[in-house]
Each structure stands twice: as C-alpha cells, then as structure tokens.
Image 1 (cartoon, helix red, strand yellow):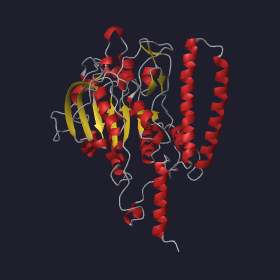
Image 2 (cartoon, helix red, strand yellow; image 1 turned 60 degrees about the vertical axis):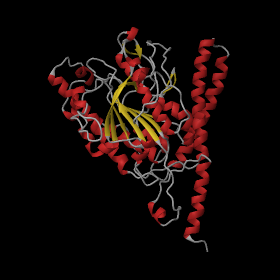
Image 3 (cartoon, helix red, strand yellow; image 1 turned 90 degrees about the vertical axis):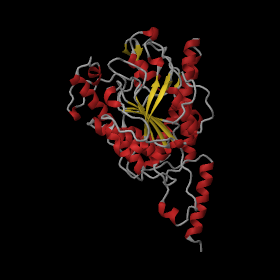
Image 4 (cartoon, helix red, strand yellow; image 1 turned 180 degrees about the vertical axis):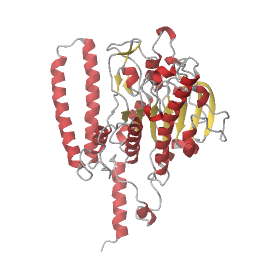
Length: 451
C-alpha cells in the first residue's frame, strides 16, 4: 500500500518538475506538510518581487523628513503611521528626477513628475498622439522575468484611465494617468476596478467555479485577437509609413496578450483564492485603496505576478478627503503659499496616504511566504512621488520610502544619499531581482550603493 509519505514525496517531485517547466502553481506552502517532512526537509526558495506605489502632489517637507539618520531614527509626524512596520522601511533622502524639472518646456510639472518617475526620461511636451516617454523600470524587469508568472506585470490604479487628451499645460493625459511604459509611446493602462482585476486574475464567479469562466474568457480573447489580427493585415495595405509604425506598436501589444494567454493555458490550473470576488469600486476612498492593496498582496501571494505598479491617485489630483474632514482639493491645498492652515491639511493628507500604505505593509509582513519568512521579506516596494514640494514644484530630494527586505535590502533606517538620480535606485533593484545587468535606465549614472 502506498504510504502518505511516499505519495507526498511523489507529489513534491511532480511540483518541482512543473515549476522547472515554467508552470505556476497557485497552492501555498502548507506548514503541516512541511513539518512532517512530506515536502522535504528544506523549504523552497521564495521569489523576489517588486512594486511601485505612487502618490500625487509631493508632500509637506517639514513634516516628512526624520531628524536623524541611521537605525535609531525617529519617525517624523507624517511617517508615524509606519511605526508598526518601522523595521521594514528605509526612508531615502537625496534622490532626484532632474528630467521632471521645467528646463525649456515651461509649465507642466505634474505631467513630467509622473511621466519620468519610473522612466527617468524627459517626456515630450505634446497633447497629441506623438507622446514619447521611455521604458519604465517595472517593464524592464517584466521583459526578463515576466515569463515566469501568468502575468508579466500588473498595473493598478484608484483613479480614472486616460491615454489621450490635454491634462497639464500642453502635456498629454497619458503621462499623468499611466506609470508603466512598455516603450516610449506605449503606456500600460492600469486597472481601476478591483472586481475586473480579480476576475482577470482568477476568473468570474464564486470560489470553486472560476476555472471554467477563466477558460471561456481566454477562448473569447483568442477569438477576438484572431479577428483583430486579420483585420489589421487588411488595413495595413492602405496605410502610410507613420500609420504602419503605429499599427506595428498595436500588434506588438496584441502579441503580448496572446503570449499571456498561451502561458495561462500551459499553466492549466489558475489559483482560486477562497474569498469573495470584490463587488466593484467601494464608495469610501480609504476602502478603495485598501482593497487594491489586498489585490496586490493576493497577486504576489499566488505568484500570479512578481512585478506591479499602483497609481494611488494621478499626479495633480484635486481629490477632497471627507474621511479626515478635508473638503478642499489636494492640488489646490498643495499651493499653500506658506499659509499654515493649508500646510497642516496637506500634512494630514500625507499621513492619510501613509496610513493606508502602513496597513498594506502590516498585512504583507503577517503573511508567510513559501520559504517560511514574511512575504515582505522577499519584496521590494518603492513608495513616493515625482514632486518633492508640491507648492514649489521641486523635483529634487523626493519623498521616497523603500519597504521590504527583498534581495537583501537593509531595512529599518533613514539614509541621506548625496543628490543622485532616482533611477540609480532602480538599477540596484533590478540587480536584486536577478535581471541581467542593465547598464543604464533613463538618466541613471551608477548603481545606488548602501540600500
């Protein structure tokens, strides 16, 4: 008779083979089996993950920065919500985005701030179709590591979705509403609806019935792709060269979708989390943010992706915050001109965003990864804004937090770097993700040391 141990050992061998073949399994590691030796004496190695969280309009600088550097630093008034997870965060000073400054382009700091945040390039000042940014750090990682998971990357937002239009002094809305860029003219639109995001990841319907709906959706998507590709070949014959270039970009995006479908079909069984599908966008902004953070954690936990961006609100957002008694718009308040009452409200908004981020980190620290350590121990998360001081529209000494300990980060301290491009940090993160050496990203000059 086959013993439980023998059956479990064969199951572990089969799982190891499937992982080696690039198949993603959605089951978590069960401690009871690990403890009994069914899955072997050694815990599996957990993957390293990276995420980028963006908040708009800079911060009230006086309340943001801690007074002392090093491990013994005291959290500033704005950063106090991070007290329960202080050991997991690095506050980084001295990081700049010089390509977000005005230069010869004049007004448009909000568009440049978010457009350059993950790319490090000076975006083209245009409100037309000729947008031009650069590949973002998340997509550099996705190009090399995206094939290891069902989704190369995920893009999330708690704001509207725009790819065109004039949003900031002659700059396209694409720069403010999209963090991730697959290429200079190819922004990746984020998903703002948690229900649609969940169904895209795991299928529609209740727990136990999602596999069939996911298979149906894949088949429908494949049919649509076939139809569009055939239509595109017909249209291409009558296009000029510039339009053909645009069409080629579009077809490249379609091929990426097709590749994702193929990977999903090879993986066969998608994860099926034992939780209800979100009903949609919550009425409360606070609940909305938390739900999207939960979706991000779930995607990492099920190894559906290892790379993500989260645009909490678009740069220049003028949202009010009734949850904390602030009826004025965020952007309007950021131009406080030194008025104490307005500065205090900006500091409260900064704390509100940090409180949501802190709750997210607490959840990630409480979840055990497949190696028995906290999920946060294997994750790198950048939190920040492309504006430093929202009142003056500065783009140096940006408010940046690097959370987690993925890739061997030295968390739990405040480090002042000496005026370096933000992209230097990204090169160091790509190294820790295991991406083959990237010599340069945007305006980078070297790897950021001491992270």
